[in-house]
Length: 552
View 1 (cartoon, rainbow, N blue to C red):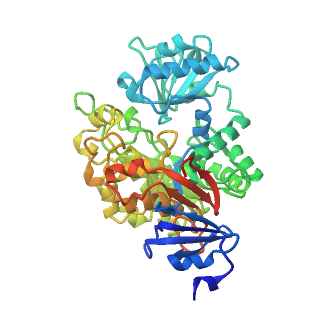
View 2: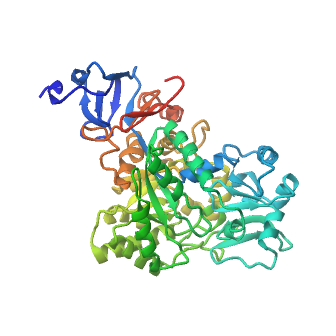
View 3: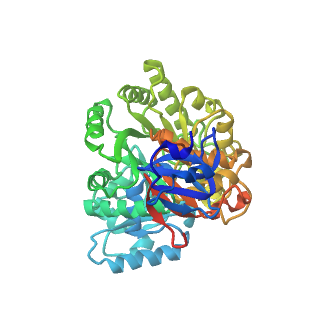
């Protein structure tokens, strides 16, 4: 049937450039038409038959059209709030940290506490800054600044005193107070120890959370992101709760992205919290916002030795220590919890960074499968820094999606100085084994974990393909684990759409929602080393433009 006979004219038509569909049945076209927020035709010159008097025609001018990117692991409201407070991201220069902290404190004399984050562990010896630096900048108010991975925070003396943290305060079971040689708290709190101070800080207000969401949404749309999964909603254990911002924006129409909220599993509670989770799933799902997922953080991070490992960490001399990291939830209890969540139709989104945590998460999914069969809940494991070879094939066998943070698979001081020496060469070579997982038939999704790292999908795709950071050429990070460009892009489009249960997005095919992105160049047309320089010109959600670059 001719395209023109398939219905009334299109509202929107893209033509004159490559249409990269991410659909393996038809990978490329040159024209795409949209009507009522959905794709009605994908093809070539024949699609132009749908142009009518009111059709907006977008001349791609050789620029590629792709499905909108979807971030399968992000903390959008948290990132927006940080951008609106002390933002230490984008630099590793301690003097720049000092300048930004002092400038913010001077500009906000009304603030009872100075808060924010985004600093890098590589900026400080051993990854641990001291309170004296903050004391010199802000002596009269408490300061609390999360590091970029949000598994530790930097505090001044006033914050420690207000919280009653002294040399006699014991480490909590799920964290550590860093101490100076005399035994006094040094100003760095790891994991659960952050809450010793955080619970005394004034909470972020509802207005600040909503403003943070709007700031984040503008940024993410400018990077081509049209949907995401917020990895902590209804937080506990010291983590914030952005659910009211999402619900407000969903109700007033200002939420233009589609967002899946991952409800936090409180690790100090058991299955009695299922009632609360079921209530939150019902109460917080509205419009573009749905809370259909539960987030379980099973371990910490490798650079502060809290990622759960099968074998112990090494000391600076290369000898085994007694530390194998922290499993926040007992593995036997984890299997029970995941089985119960699966039975209630929840997707489980695991933070699993060390190889022991990965194994414990996979064991929990296996228990759920054994108890209830294979439901379409689409469980996924995020981070996957170290995966034991024995567990690579289990992702495909169990139907578990690997949620990749590709940007982390590169050489940088935090990796080379604070991680690899304490893992040892054999285990270090297992880090971010994307290639091994691909060859084993694993399904991929992709996320940024922003504000831990950049929310730019194209920067992440660059690293997934080259195992280097864009603009910082050097030795690739275990290049045998590189991905091809199509696989990396598909993870950020079709793969994340699968994890988000947004089955009418992620590929460009008739009937799907018109969530679209126009790039400034075809990433297939140049060398891999230039992928990260690609920029977003236009972003559409349901056929409505939500971002246009100045030079678009």
